[in-house]
Length: 268
Ligand code: SF4
Image 1: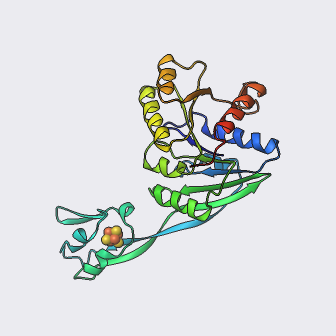
Image 2: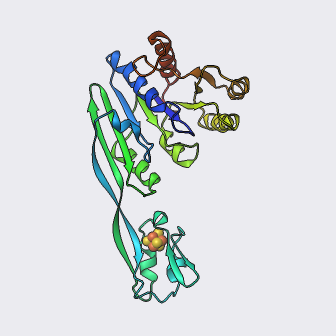
Image 3: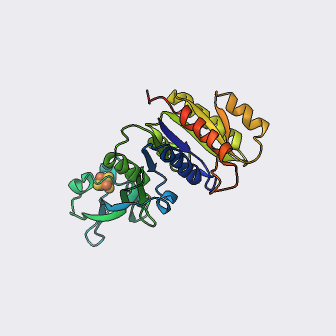
Protein backbone atom coordinates (compact mmCIF):
# COMPACT_ATOMS: atom_id res chain seq x y z
CA UNK A 1 0.00 0.00 0.00
CA UNK A 2 1.50 3.21 -1.23
CA UNK A 3 -0.52 6.36 -0.62
CA UNK A 4 -0.04 9.41 -2.85
CA UNK A 5 -1.13 12.65 -1.16
CA UNK A 6 -1.78 15.52 -3.55
CA UNK A 7 -2.91 19.12 -2.99
CA UNK A 8 -3.06 22.33 -4.98
CA UNK A 9 -2.97 24.64 -1.96
CA UNK A 10 -0.79 24.89 1.11
CA UNK A 11 -2.13 24.66 4.65
CA UNK A 12 -4.81 22.09 3.86
CA UNK A 13 -3.41 19.68 6.44
CA UNK A 14 -1.26 17.26 4.43
CA UNK A 15 1.70 17.51 6.80
CA UNK A 16 -0.47 16.63 9.80
CA UNK A 17 -2.24 13.93 7.81
CA UNK A 18 1.08 12.36 6.83
CA UNK A 19 2.23 12.36 10.45
CA UNK A 20 -1.08 10.86 11.59
CA UNK A 21 -0.97 8.14 8.93
CA UNK A 22 2.61 7.27 9.90
CA UNK A 23 1.73 7.27 13.63
CA UNK A 24 -1.20 4.95 12.92
CA UNK A 25 1.16 2.31 11.49
CA UNK A 26 3.83 2.78 14.17
CA UNK A 27 1.27 2.31 16.94
CA UNK A 28 0.44 -1.06 15.39
CA UNK A 29 4.08 -2.11 15.32
CA UNK A 30 4.55 -1.69 11.57
CA UNK A 31 7.38 -0.04 9.68
CA UNK A 32 6.34 2.84 7.43
CA UNK A 33 8.18 4.77 4.71
CA UNK A 34 7.53 8.49 4.32
CA UNK A 35 8.64 10.42 1.23
CA UNK A 36 8.63 14.22 1.20
CA UNK A 37 8.53 15.28 -2.48
CA UNK A 38 7.26 18.82 -1.81
CA UNK A 39 10.83 20.01 -2.35
CA UNK A 40 10.17 23.76 -2.31
CA UNK A 41 8.44 23.58 1.08
CA UNK A 42 9.33 20.24 2.72
CA UNK A 43 7.54 20.79 6.03
CA UNK A 44 7.96 17.16 7.10
CA UNK A 45 11.67 17.67 7.72
CA UNK A 46 10.66 19.59 10.85
CA UNK A 47 9.17 16.41 12.27
CA UNK A 48 11.46 13.59 11.17
CA UNK A 49 15.24 13.36 11.52
CA UNK A 50 17.25 13.39 8.30
CA UNK A 51 20.85 13.69 7.14
CA UNK A 52 21.26 15.15 3.71
CA UNK A 53 23.81 15.40 0.93
CA UNK A 54 24.10 18.37 -1.41
CA UNK A 55 22.92 17.77 -4.98
CA UNK A 56 25.01 19.61 -7.54
CA UNK A 57 24.36 20.32 -11.19
CA UNK A 58 26.65 21.26 -14.06
CA UNK A 59 25.28 24.13 -16.14
CA UNK A 60 26.71 25.99 -19.11
CA UNK A 61 27.86 29.59 -18.84
CA UNK A 62 28.92 32.10 -21.47
CA UNK A 63 32.15 34.06 -21.27
CA UNK A 64 30.98 37.49 -22.40
CA UNK A 65 34.54 38.60 -23.20
CA UNK A 66 34.83 35.87 -25.88
CA UNK A 67 31.26 35.68 -27.22
CA UNK A 68 30.70 37.31 -30.66
CA UNK A 69 26.98 36.43 -30.77
CA UNK A 70 27.50 33.84 -33.49
CA UNK A 71 24.33 32.19 -32.17
CA UNK A 72 25.35 28.59 -32.92
CA UNK A 73 24.78 27.61 -29.29
CA UNK A 74 21.14 28.73 -29.57
CA UNK A 75 20.34 26.34 -32.41
CA UNK A 76 22.45 23.57 -30.82
CA UNK A 77 20.47 23.67 -27.58
CA UNK A 78 17.39 21.44 -27.73
CA UNK A 79 16.18 22.63 -24.33
CA UNK A 80 15.79 26.37 -24.97
CA UNK A 81 18.41 27.19 -22.36
CA UNK A 82 20.03 29.96 -24.42
CA UNK A 83 18.33 32.68 -26.45
CA UNK A 84 19.28 35.98 -28.00
CA UNK A 85 17.44 39.05 -26.79
CA UNK A 86 18.52 42.14 -28.70
CA UNK A 87 22.29 42.07 -28.71
CA UNK A 88 22.63 39.89 -25.65
CA UNK A 89 22.72 36.14 -25.04
CA UNK A 90 20.29 35.27 -22.28
CA UNK A 91 20.71 31.97 -20.47
CA UNK A 92 18.00 30.01 -18.67
CA UNK A 93 20.09 27.82 -16.41
CA UNK A 94 17.13 25.79 -15.10
CA UNK A 95 16.50 24.44 -18.60
CA UNK A 96 20.15 23.40 -19.07
CA UNK A 97 20.81 19.64 -19.00
CA UNK A 98 24.59 19.99 -19.12
CA UNK A 99 24.79 18.04 -22.40
CA UNK A 100 27.62 20.20 -23.81
CA UNK A 101 26.23 20.60 -27.35
CA UNK A 102 26.50 24.39 -27.11
CA UNK A 103 30.16 24.13 -26.12
CA UNK A 104 30.94 21.83 -29.05
CA UNK A 105 29.62 24.25 -31.67
CA UNK A 106 30.86 27.56 -30.26
CA UNK A 107 33.51 28.97 -32.69
CA UNK A 108 34.94 31.23 -29.97
CA UNK A 109 35.21 28.61 -27.24
CA UNK A 110 33.13 31.00 -25.12
CA UNK A 111 31.06 28.32 -23.33
CA UNK A 112 32.29 26.83 -20.09
CA UNK A 113 30.68 24.80 -17.31
CA UNK A 114 30.09 25.66 -13.72
CA UNK A 115 28.71 23.63 -10.84
CA UNK A 116 25.75 25.00 -8.94
CA UNK A 117 24.00 23.76 -5.81
CA UNK A 118 20.49 22.55 -6.71
CA UNK A 119 19.42 21.41 -3.26
CA UNK A 120 19.81 18.46 -0.93
CA UNK A 121 18.52 14.92 -0.65
CA UNK A 122 18.63 12.74 2.45
CA UNK A 123 17.05 10.24 4.78
CA UNK A 124 16.59 9.45 8.46
CA UNK A 125 14.90 6.98 10.74
CA UNK A 126 12.91 7.51 13.94
CA UNK A 127 11.17 4.68 15.74
CA UNK A 128 9.69 2.64 12.88
CA UNK A 129 9.47 5.50 10.38
CA UNK A 130 11.99 5.65 7.53
CA UNK A 131 11.97 9.16 6.15
CA UNK A 132 13.25 10.41 2.79
CA UNK A 133 13.19 14.02 1.64
CA UNK A 134 14.64 16.61 -0.71
CA UNK A 135 14.88 20.37 -0.33
CA UNK A 136 15.56 22.97 -3.01
CA UNK A 137 18.43 25.38 -2.54
CA UNK A 138 17.14 28.95 -1.92
CA UNK A 139 16.13 30.71 -5.14
CA UNK A 140 16.62 27.59 -7.29
CA UNK A 141 14.00 25.82 -9.40
CA UNK A 142 15.23 22.25 -9.85
CA UNK A 143 12.12 20.42 -8.62
CA UNK A 144 12.25 17.77 -11.34
CA UNK A 145 15.93 17.04 -10.74
CA UNK A 146 15.47 16.70 -6.97
CA UNK A 147 12.38 14.48 -7.23
CA UNK A 148 14.23 12.24 -9.68
CA UNK A 149 17.33 12.14 -7.48
CA UNK A 150 15.27 11.34 -4.38
CA UNK A 151 13.61 8.42 -6.17
CA UNK A 152 16.89 7.14 -7.58
CA UNK A 153 18.69 7.37 -4.24
CA UNK A 154 15.90 5.85 -2.16
CA UNK A 155 13.74 3.71 -4.49
CA UNK A 156 10.14 3.14 -3.42
CA UNK A 157 10.16 -0.60 -2.99
CA UNK A 158 6.78 -1.26 -1.43
CA UNK A 159 4.61 -0.24 1.43
CA UNK A 160 3.30 0.83 3.66
CA UNK A 161 4.51 4.13 2.26
CA UNK A 162 3.26 7.71 2.04
CA UNK A 163 4.27 9.94 -0.88
CA UNK A 164 3.68 13.67 -0.28
CA UNK A 165 3.63 15.32 -3.71
CA UNK A 166 4.61 18.89 -4.57
CA UNK A 167 1.69 21.34 -4.77
CA UNK A 168 -0.33 21.14 -7.99
CA UNK A 169 -1.74 18.43 -10.20
CA UNK A 170 0.84 18.79 -12.97
CA UNK A 171 3.84 16.86 -14.19
CA UNK A 172 5.96 17.28 -11.04
CA UNK A 173 3.23 15.92 -8.78
CA UNK A 174 2.46 13.05 -11.12
CA UNK A 175 6.12 12.12 -11.18
CA UNK A 176 6.11 12.07 -7.36
CA UNK A 177 3.05 9.82 -7.00
CA UNK A 178 3.70 7.56 -9.99
CA UNK A 179 4.22 4.50 -7.75
CA UNK A 180 1.12 5.03 -5.58
CA UNK A 181 -1.49 2.31 -5.17
CA UNK A 182 -4.14 4.90 -4.20
CA UNK A 183 -4.37 8.67 -4.58
CA UNK A 184 -5.81 11.37 -2.30
CA UNK A 185 -6.56 15.01 -2.96
CA UNK A 186 -6.43 16.97 0.29
CA UNK A 187 -8.41 20.17 -0.12
CA UNK A 188 -10.79 22.67 1.41
CA UNK A 189 -13.36 25.25 0.25
CA UNK A 190 -11.94 27.66 -2.33
CA UNK A 191 -12.92 29.13 -5.68
CA UNK A 192 -12.50 26.53 -8.40
CA UNK A 193 -12.50 23.52 -6.07
CA UNK A 194 -14.91 21.58 -8.30
CA UNK A 195 -12.60 22.03 -11.29
CA UNK A 196 -9.72 20.84 -9.11
CA UNK A 197 -11.68 17.69 -8.23
CA UNK A 198 -12.47 17.08 -11.92
CA UNK A 199 -8.76 17.24 -12.78
CA UNK A 200 -7.91 14.95 -9.86
CA UNK A 201 -10.68 12.55 -10.89
CA UNK A 202 -9.21 12.30 -14.38
CA UNK A 203 -5.78 11.58 -12.90
CA UNK A 204 -7.19 8.79 -10.72
CA UNK A 205 -9.00 7.31 -13.71
CA UNK A 206 -5.84 7.55 -15.79
CA UNK A 207 -3.85 5.71 -13.09
CA UNK A 208 -6.67 3.15 -12.74
CA UNK A 209 -6.31 2.96 -8.95
CA UNK A 210 -8.64 3.93 -6.06
CA UNK A 211 -8.83 7.55 -4.97
CA UNK A 212 -10.52 9.85 -2.48
CA UNK A 213 -10.99 13.51 -1.70
CA UNK A 214 -10.00 14.39 1.86
CA UNK A 215 -11.91 17.45 2.87
CA UNK A 216 -10.73 19.96 5.43
CA UNK A 217 -13.82 21.59 6.85
CA UNK A 218 -17.01 20.80 8.66
CA UNK A 219 -19.36 19.90 5.79
CA UNK A 220 -18.58 18.77 2.29
CA UNK A 221 -20.48 21.05 -0.15
CA UNK A 222 -22.98 19.28 -2.39
CA UNK A 223 -21.19 20.32 -5.59
CA UNK A 224 -17.92 18.87 -4.29
CA UNK A 225 -19.62 15.63 -3.28
CA UNK A 226 -21.22 15.30 -6.71
CA UNK A 227 -18.00 16.09 -8.56
CA UNK A 228 -16.17 13.44 -6.52
CA UNK A 229 -18.90 10.83 -6.98
CA UNK A 230 -18.81 11.42 -10.74
CA UNK A 231 -15.31 9.91 -10.73
CA UNK A 232 -16.02 7.19 -8.19
CA UNK A 233 -14.03 9.05 -5.53
CA UNK A 234 -14.82 8.69 -1.85
CA UNK A 235 -15.06 11.88 0.20
CA UNK A 236 -13.53 11.70 3.67
CA UNK A 237 -13.20 14.30 6.41
CA UNK A 238 -9.60 15.22 7.16
CA UNK A 239 -8.67 13.00 10.10
CA UNK A 240 -6.53 14.53 12.77
CA UNK A 241 -5.33 12.79 15.88
CA UNK A 242 -6.19 14.72 19.06
CA UNK A 243 -2.66 15.80 19.90
CA UNK A 244 -2.49 17.64 16.55
CA UNK A 245 -5.96 19.19 16.41
CA UNK A 246 -9.25 18.68 18.22
CA UNK A 247 -11.11 15.67 16.77
CA UNK A 248 -11.67 12.57 18.83
CA UNK A 249 -9.14 9.79 18.54
CA UNK A 250 -11.79 7.32 17.49
CA UNK A 251 -13.15 9.49 14.64
CA UNK A 252 -9.65 10.23 13.43
CA UNK A 253 -8.47 6.65 13.59
CA UNK A 254 -11.43 5.25 11.71
CA UNK A 255 -10.67 7.53 8.80
CA UNK A 256 -6.94 6.82 8.95
CA UNK A 257 -7.75 3.13 8.74
CA UNK A 258 -10.05 3.77 5.78
CA UNK A 259 -7.31 5.69 3.97
CA UNK A 260 -4.77 2.91 4.51
CA UNK A 261 -7.29 0.25 3.49
CA UNK A 262 -8.20 2.08 0.29
CA UNK A 263 -4.55 1.84 -0.69
CA UNK A 264 -4.44 -1.86 0.09
CA UNK A 265 -3.51 -3.04 -3.38
CA UNK A 266 -0.13 -2.79 -5.05
CA UNK A 267 0.38 -0.52 -8.06
CA UNK A 268 -0.59 -2.33 -11.24
S1 SF4 B 1 24.77 22.34 -22.10
FE1 SF4 B 1 23.18 21.48 -23.47
S2 SF4 B 1 21.26 22.04 -22.41
FE2 SF4 B 1 22.86 23.31 -21.52
S3 SF4 B 1 22.77 25.20 -22.68
FE3 SF4 B 1 24.34 23.89 -23.66
S4 SF4 B 1 23.21 22.80 -25.27
FE4 SF4 B 1 21.66 23.66 -23.88
